[in-house]
Length: 305
Image (cartoon, rainbow, N blue to C red):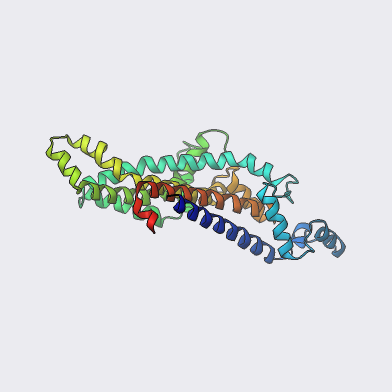
């Protein structure tokens, strides 16, 4: 088990390092950063002064090593636009993104597990087919389009919920639905598959032969084992949700990390973009690592792969 964890940690570190290199290089190769910072009306002398002040006149490898050294101590530099440290901006916006991701995940779990259990118990019936249709539609529908549809129906037409902002819990309802619906189909199908496998296992047949009631067999024996891989998948889906918050927060004007990244991209605020990309990637990498370790602890066969 220890060797498996060490191997997974090394893979996670290499992935994080690769993401930092690729994102840094792509941003710096997308154009002249000094010109973007100075603006279209700046003179050549002003552009050159900015290039020297921000260290953009040095080799790109040296710039990356300096940035990486600062990132290891959570020093991502200062924002070009906000004139504030990037860490302060991230700390200020992160609670909104984490709240949105947590609510979206809770909603996805609350819908997917009961629906998956019901689909397994009603296998090959209209309920099962309707559940699978729900899953297909959920994965085929773009989250931003679904979010706009929710705004039109519940915020504009019915006026039940606000369309934008983050002042109260009501502002998180629609974005949580839009973000959580995308993760629901995968967890629902995995729950259904796990339940079908468990219900056909020997110990379930033995439990039924002993006279245990249907509800006890389903919830105390079958669901307890079928839901284990769903928990690991939920951790991975949370990473996807935090990454997908860039789109959803822009649609609903939530001032989280996603909105911060969108504003930074539109304003050529490269230190903020680099930091947000790395932070979101680290969330996903850590959650995936925890899911792998949990699966390995529950299934020894995984450790031999």
